Length: 263
Image 1 (cartoon, rainbow, N blue to C red):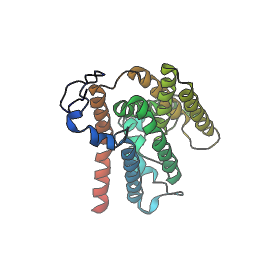
Image 2: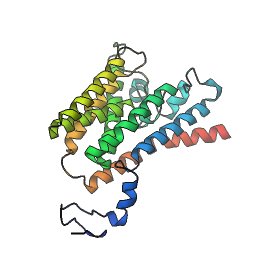
Image 3: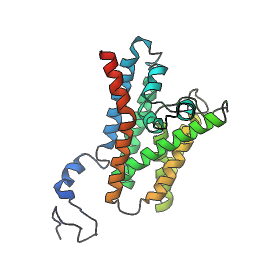
Image 4: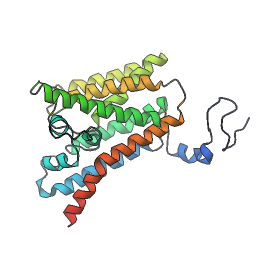
């Protein structure tokens, strides 16, 4: 039986508003993540270029934006969160990156994991998982950095990057595998997480606490959202709130910095 675009529910599966008032074909054309992946890549890329431009000639090697610029735009860590009281940096730091390799590798992971997670959870829940994971990762890193300063490999005074959210996506996929009985999904996600996590103890400047906190946040967010149940309209609404809060956390600083440079 066919379903009209304005029908409240699907007669076959019971899904609410299956036609999305006629917008379903356009949304499907954006992919299973409804354009969230290109939005992340585009936004992070634009913000990174702007951070270099605002740094002027003071950016460092490997095209690293200057520390004061990153701090102004919203890096997280023990100093911004607990000393400066800038709790919104738990949201903004995930959109900032420390150098060209940092953003390139993170965006490669985003391109692979966001659509895959959206296939399992739906676009709205993927946005929620991404945001919650980023916040939980930076919160753990900031907390350890403040209360246990100098602890080897863990905690950070200043930290940025999308890797906390990336590990959160892996945590959500691990939970999906456990919930659905899919060993393939769970084992592959664990393999990626353990391999990438091990690199954090080999390479310098890696925020291992953010990775662990992000993974845990993604796992428990996935458990709360239950991937085996249909995505609901409140998931979409919560996802929009997450995106709005993230943009509010960083856009005023970017606009003010651009105005300052241009003037």
